[in-house]
Every structure is written in structure tokens, then in C-alpha cells.
Length: 325
Image (cartoon, rainbow, N blue to C red; front, side, top):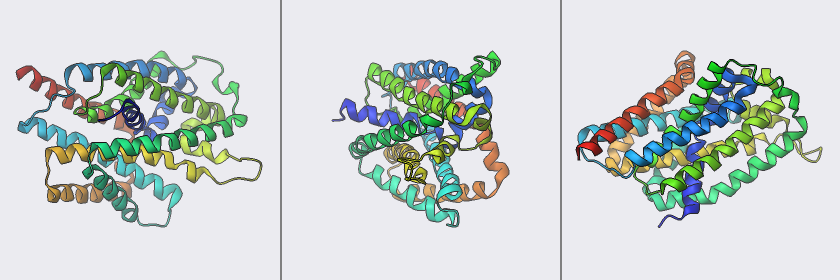
């Protein structure tokens, strides 16, 4: 039996799983200092997406070949993006001289082993990690408040409305589409939407702090603005260099997302040797893409579109299957 607290924990991590290296960075580049408004509008868009998911495709399992193929593709894509971000982020800031495969292989293997324990283990782990994540985020955001300025938001609404709308769509896609991986987990619709909104409010809070601290120009420059803002943390005038510890909260998001994806793949495939082939293929392509900047940059720039396309295909196939059953 999964409790509502555990469901909220899982929804929180799923909601934020695409923000490291992509979410904040892309949205800031589009709507700049008016991103706070885009995030609020994007929350409404995302809540609508989740309403459609709950109403039309959730808890509608199917064993036909097409839905299985779509399930494979969607979850493998999510895992690939997660591991790619882990690879790039870790080798850029944490373990700069460590071979990427030494980072990605243990991470993806651990997520797979967690998934094999079942959904109850996954949600219990999410429940355990949530207070740690929220504590680190709260402490870090409070610590950088002194460096923030209201002038970073002024004057208001100078970005064209078209860009604010595009940024809102990006936000809705990044935060809502990953919820498709919860399609076979029984979550009440109202609880799901409320949990999504609460999780999104935390993301909006973080976004506002980043804008106020880095300013309207630097938020467009940095690839990892959510990490760069942590570099300004200095507690009690002598505790410094703690950004790497606090940065672990984003690994929690990616780990929980990957674990849920593997859980869904295990239910569909249920053959370890096929999963092993998938893991090996993901690790190989992650290494290939990360070593070829043009491919990594293409994925980064077009990730909202790619995510929306594969998410739409997932939704349409499962919806048509429900209509025909």
C-alpha cells in the first residue's frame, strides 16, 4: 500500500527530474528575468497535461506490441537523458578527471537494482530522500538570499509575450511529461494534481532565487545556473565550498526518475539479459554523445520538442488502445 506521503514524494522527484542542465537553463534563455511569470503559467499548463493523463490513459495497461514498443521507447529515452545529464554534470564539476563510464555505469546499475525491488521500495526511498532534498534546498536558498536583488526583476514584463508563452510551454513540458512514467501507479487525480502544483511551487521558488541572485544577464550565460548560484553560499563567514554537497539534490531527482523507468521496463520486458543490453546501449550512446559536443548541444536545445513528441506519441497510443478496448 502506497501512502499519500509516498506518492507526493515520488511526484516531487518526477516533476523536477528535467531541470538540471536543461529546464532552468533553456527557460532562462527564452524569457530571461520574466521567467517567474512563465513558470507560473507553465504550472497551469502542466496541471492541464496531468489532468488529461489521469483522465484518459492512466491505469490502462495493454499487452499489444505497439504499446509495448512505445513504452520501451519512452522510458529508454528518459533514462538516456537522465544518464547523459549525470555524465555531463558530474564530469564538469565533481569528478573532472574521472572517465565518464566510471560515473554512469554505477549510477544506472544502482537505479536498475532499486527498480528490481519493486515500487514499494522506490516510493519508500523517495519518502526518505524528500526531507533531505527539501532541507538542503531551503538552507541553500536562504543562504544566497543576501546576494539577491529585487532590481534583477525590474522593469517587469519587458520580454515579448510570445517568448513568455514559449517558455511557459517548455516549463509545462519539462515538469508534466515525465509524469507519463506513472501511468500504471494508482494515484488519485486530485492528489496527483495538487502534489504536482506543490512540487512546481518549489521549482518556482528556486527559479526566483536564481534570477534575483545571478541577475538577468548571467542566468542566460550559465549552462547550470541552479548550480552556479550555489557557489555564492558562505555560511557563518567561514563555511565555504559546500555547493557540491547541496548539488546532490539533483542526483536524487535523476535517480528516482531512472528507477521508476526501469521499474516500468521490468514489468513490460521481465528479462534481465534484454535490460542488460539496454543498459549497455544507453551507456555507450551517453559516452558517444557527451564526447561529441554538437550532438549533446542539439539534444539540449531541442529537448522540450523531443520530449513533447515522444510524450504525445505515448499518450495517443495508450488513448487509442483504451478507445478500442
